[in-house]
Image 1 (tube, rainbow, N blue to C red):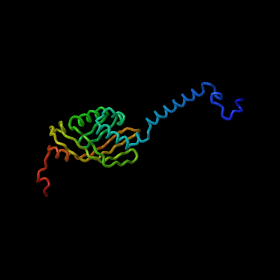
Image 2: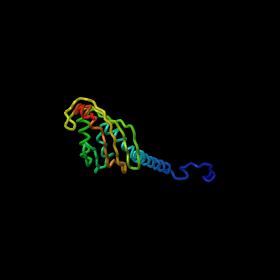
Image 3: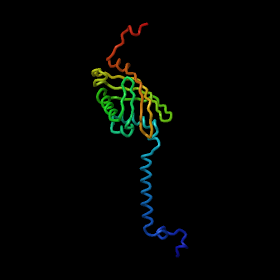
Image 4: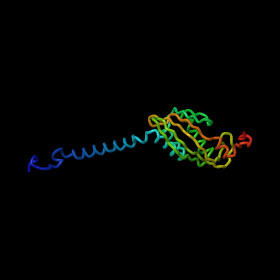
Length: 188
């Protein structure tokens, strides 16, 4: 039977003996590149809210400071209100290490609300931990405290560049017994 007379000629006869192997290898290479691209560029990974949630899950709650450079820009600005300001990734890493493993143990942040507008993410949260080290001049108390907070993050190109925080530090210090309110302070 001639090749032209075959209803479905074998691919090898049409393309040559090594064509099938070449096509298979090219298909596998393309699939591997596609998988790698999908892994690197999942749109949700770079969406501002996903970046912030990953920071909270992996760094704040998970304690993995090794992923900070994946989530925060090298020239970051952290505005912590009464907690001060931090500029640069190295200084921020030191601050997190001191507060999550030094001042408080069992640190955990629960997210209640997330609101996103463009590159800005606002998070309402409750933070908690047991004070096992010095904090803002207060020696370790061994007490557990929970306090409310709001964080506003600016995310660009998959990284947090700037963040502002307002946390109930007074409420936290009262729970730790570091401060007390005089009854007269609340009287008219």
